[in-house]
Length: 535
Image (tube, rainbow, N blue to C red; front, side, top):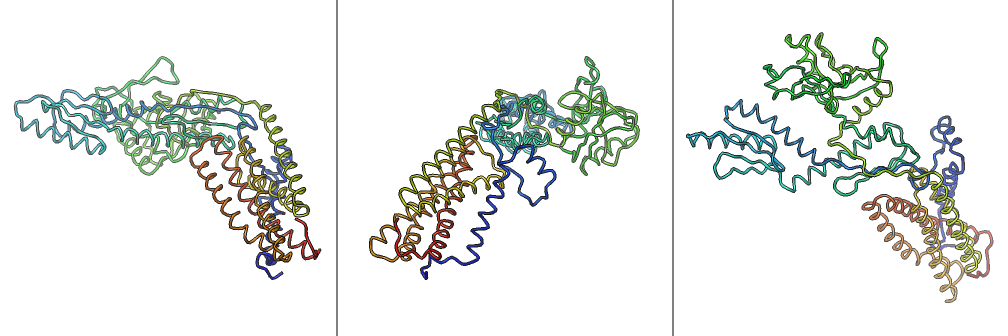
């Protein structure tokens, strides 16, 4: 047994056996009931394999939501921010203008007519400089009369902004859903402005929809009329409705003193009087800014408004400087409302509102039928493959069949270890890999037949069968793996599920065909010492 492919080092044999034992150990939890698995996860040591493969929406039922991002709001908010920011800049530089207004994908600054052309030209130059400082992506054009400056975003810039907004929206949706404890949600983009959200096991998505329906844009504003000097410096005032007092409203400064992106944490707690509140922490910049505002003598005793999504949730008065970076949001909240508000603030504000365009619910009974049908397909496919292999190759067909069964166990074990989601297309991929796993053995056995017919010895024929078929097996598995990786990279939903199961199946089938069947063949040769073999 000096031939290279017919020699396996002892450590290699131990490794192969250990992989097989671990595969059965990690696949075993899939045979337990859900209640038993949950009990083991809560009580068993961390090193004990107790996790099962996760089932996708099509197998265990759940909810499917199609969400649309309101992209037009993003562009309009950006325009409004520039309009509000440029006013004090123009006043500071004493540039006369008649109107600042949004236009398609930008803003327009109309200059005041003046007989002094040099003064107008200087003012236009300063306006262009201010606009470029505010947004370097603006394309700035001066009209023929020299009095109108248009700053617009190019189509490429708008596409890039929308792409960023969609990416950010997906991340915020993921954070909010994860915070609710929903296991293994599927969140993927669809087109230029849509998000598909699948929630396996969740039959009533009302709370998720409520959480996603709020932008959770938190801001803090000083309360006061637009005639106040500090209001004028902040771009004037706006009137916002009060959540606690329906029908009532308050004027607040248009420009906020704090924004939600300055928050570092938010938790639902109880106040000293026993009511539910949201306690939050500010970053260094937010804490300093809040301290500066609340420390001004003229602000002591004045109320400031806590605004969430354009509505005032609370308007407490400043009694003393708040400089520790810690504060609370109180109001007429229930425990669930404070918990959800804290969750929203921790996850961050959505860059644009989301609308539910599509909602579907898949019942668990449909998933159970799919599992039963998929399991039957796997069993029938395995049985027919085993029968065909044993009839064609005898004892070597038995070796290949044993390796095939262990291969299926290894697929389930790897999906459990990686916590991969098994979908209905994933079951189809497993059935496909069952056939692929036997293909490698067929190549080896046919090569062995050719070598035996050529008059070679048993060991020489076996070595040639494995060594010369190895390159072909490696090439076929590698090309299939590349195709599966491409499917995973560019596909969505069911295609990803198919690709994941296919990638895992290719790896395990290569191991079982090249390593496991070879080990069984070598062990048989060592103990049986056959004079002739029939393949």
